[in-house]
Image 1 (cartoon, rainbow, N blue to C red):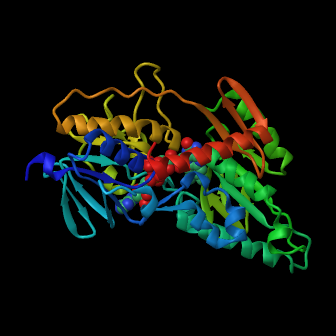
Image 2 (image 1 turned 90 degrees about the horizontal axis):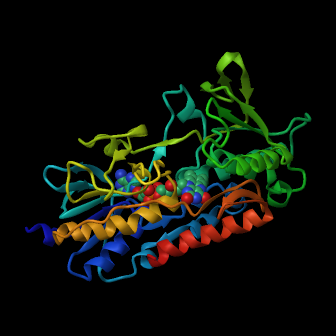
Image 3 (image 1 turned 90 degrees about the vertical axis):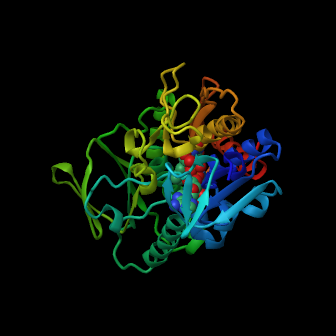
Length: 390
Ligand SMILES: Cc1cc2nc3c(=O)[nH]c(=O)nc-3n(C[C@H](O)[C@H](O)[C@H](O)COP(=O)(O)OP(=O)(O)OC[C@H]3O[C@@H](n4cnc5c(N)ncnc54)[C@H](O)[C@@H]3O)c2cc1C
């Protein structure tokens, strides 16, 4: 089969994959089949999974964060395969999906990221996570149960929640749990959780603008979140986290937000890798030794040569990269010149509790409810992009 006839295969229907697929469809004008593969028949609005109060209130609410393929891929030019990507054979130009071999002419690897536990004993087994929908669902149910039980405790203690990781995900999750109005969800006798955020050795909100960090810290403290900085978690046992230097943090519930890495099948690819196994791509977002194979989103490491900035692993970056990579995949099949990717950050906003946020947008620091409003608008924009492809 000719390379063009094999068409373009897109692995992953996240922010990167869907946006890539729509861009390739538009650029190819129907000449090349574009097929999206994902283990779910829907896209997960992953940037909203920190809203665990909503999940605890109504576990069915998760449906609001799943955009079905009937909406996201509503175009006859886009094919779909629901299945597990098991391996990628770059030599033979094919991918194994749930036991079947699927050939490709051009390939987009958009498989996102999975939690990184850095070999910390007990971390994976004893903590929750919000990086995947199933994890967010389990966390919401566990929080709800903990709050219900707290109403019948005979001593005076509050539910102890430990959040591990002081980046944006940890900050958003800790602030959300501390500011949710639990009595309206589970009953008036529910006790306010005591939330501790362990930032580890990496500085709190490392790499974020100074004004954002200052306001986020102030809002967290105002919400009653206790920050524990400068100490890494060494091991996690049932109901207790052990920090460097012998400090023990007993908990009823712990959440791991300490970072992500690429999925194992991406790490196994015979190509150059950066931090956390990310695929090193060139300025066309193509794997250097593998023409026609592109990486987009959380799976890649790319330093913009114009700014020297390492492009972050965010939905915002994935949505910026994907249209360029999608057009380049078509150009590769048409033997035309590829265009370089340049990254310009539109701004950064972190939610810091229900109805509050901190951010830096258009060189202006914003905080409180205006920042929360901007964050909500940004989420709507991400959802619109995956629904309509632009
Ligand atoms: C709680 C939280 C809040 C966040 N908030 C923000 C924010 O406000 N702004 C922002 O810009 N970013 C935010 N991020 C980061 C953002 O979610 C990610 O950077 C973004 O999802 C990356 O997009 P992606 O398409 O690369 O990966 P994903 O969106 O994770 O998509 C990967 C897709 O691949 C599929 N997949 C993976 N492996 C397989 C397999 N083996 N077989 C089949 N399918 C597979 C998955 O099902 C998924 O659909 C947040 C992340 C989290 C966890």
